[in-house]
Image 1 (cartoon, rainbow, N blue to C red):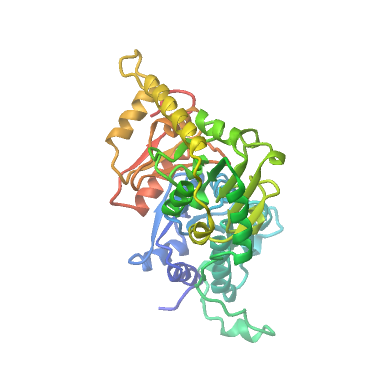
Image 2: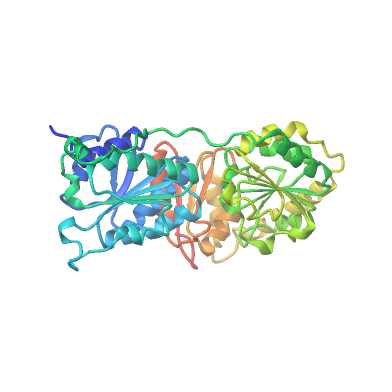
Length: 449
C-alpha cells in the first residue's frame, strides 16, 4: 500500500512518542484512516467540541510534561481550538495543533470556510506554518514539536485536505527544487542544566546576606521538591507557591505557607511582605500587588528560559538552568541560618490559618458548605489523585481546601483563567494516567458539581 501524506504526519507523531491526539476530524478524513492504520501506537480521542480538544491537549501536557496534541478541520473547527491553545501558551505548556485549511483550488474565491489559518494562529503559535507539499511534513513536524518542547509554547501546522490523500513519494517534487528540505529528526536534547560557577556564587552571596529569605516557587519547580525543601531548610525560608506550583511541595509541609495571590493564604502574603530577599524558582508570578517592593528586596531568579527572567524578581540575579539541578549546585554554597525566627513566625501564622479554614469546613452548617465538601473530597482522594479545577469561585475552594500531598497533582487554567477547563483537563489526565483517580471540580459562582 502506498504511503500518503497523512501517514507521514501520523508516523512522525509516533516517532516523537506522541500516543494521544484530541480532536474533531471530518467524517471521511484521510488523517483518521492514518490514525487507524497506526492504532497500536497512537490513539485519536474524538471530542464533541474543538475547544475541549485544545483544553485536553493543554491538560495532557500539564499532567505529563510531554507534548500535547490536537487537531481540527477548517474554518470554525480550527477557530474553536484557540481557547485551549491560549491556555497552553499562557501557562507555558508544549502543544502541537494540526488544522485543515481550505482546498487549494478554492482559495481566493470566497468559498465556505476560507480563512487564512496561518494568520489567524499567528499570535497564539510561536511556530506557525502552512504545508503545501509532502516534502515539508517530516521537517515541520520535527521543528514544530521541538520548538514547543524547548520553549513551552504552542506550534501550529495547517495543510489543505487534498494533501492528506496525496502520495508521500517526494521524488518528483525533489527534482523540481534547487535543494531538498533541511535534514531533521524526532529528537530533542536536554535544555540548560547548571549555570556557570560565577553566577552560582553571586547568587549564593545574595542569599547568604539576606536575613528574611522567602522562596517563591511555581510550575517550573514541580520536579524539584527535594531540592526546594533542602534549600528552604538551609535558609530558614518559608516556601510560598503560585497556584500552578501548588504541587511543588506538599500543602502540609511545615516549610510552606501555601499559595499566594487572590486564591492564596494570608501567611504567604505576610511572608512576602516581610522578606528582604527572594529566591524565585520557575515562576513569572503576575500578581505584583502580592509581591514586595522591588526596590526594597534583593532577588535571585532561577528559570530555564531567559525570556522569562525578571517577571517576578525585578532587577535581581538571574540563573538560567534546570530548577532541580541548579538548586543542587547552589545548596553547598549556602550558609545555614541560625536565626529561625522569620520561618517560625510564618509557621505560627500558618497554624492560625489552618484553624480558620477548619472553621469554614464545619460539617454542622446548614446548608452544606462547599469548603466542607472539598475537604471530604480531600480526605477520600487517593495519594496519587489528580484534581482538575475550573476557574472562578470554585478554584478558591479547591486551592484552599484540597491538599496536595504524596504524588497528587493539581491542574488549573492559571494565566488565562478560562472557564470550564476542569472536565477536559481531567479527561486528558485520565487518558494519560489510566491507573490514577482523576477528579474534575466544575462550576462557576455556584456550588461545585
